[in-house]
Image 1 (tube, rainbow, N blue to C red):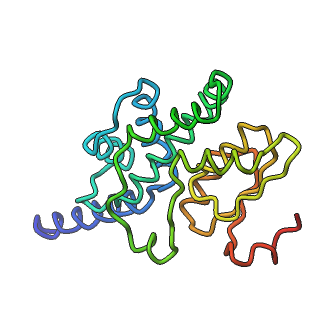
Image 2 (tube, rainbow, N blue to C red):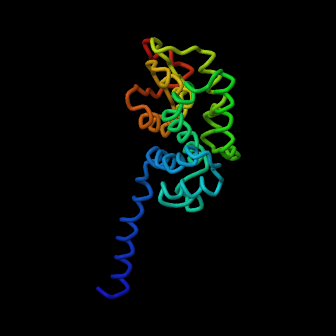
Image 3 (cartoon, one colour):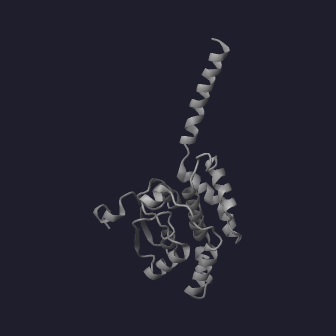
Length: 210
């Protein structure tokens, strides 16, 4: 075998070894890891800049958005996941120390103000009409529902769990449903104790016996 053919063979072998590595990236796991990198910002009351968000997501996915490893929808879902993790850790303390629901809402607004806004929508977001619930609105919704520990709460389009985490804080039982594959996988990581189904929420009553 001559040098040219040997070099060509090595190049093909190298390509076959490296190419699947990118394909094997688990989006939900990478988003969760990015959220863990962003969580300290919220814990210390520091703003999450766009640069910090890009760095956390690039590190977790093993490459940049320019390289095609992730899209901004993944970064935004990492932001939402960080909020879920923050609320799970500090939500009960925030509720117990707040003298009124208005005071709790003010705290939720301050947390939300630390985060960059969602300015880029993916094709999946548009096709599946994915509109995430802002943290303050999620609190208001949970408050209006008066969720108690004796309740079974169904979240038919659970997204990243920003509504469901309030039910968890209230110690309610939870049933989660999410059609989008990555978000459903992410919910499984965030809420391992609760079932996650993957039906079209418009027909959820045809599938779940609640």
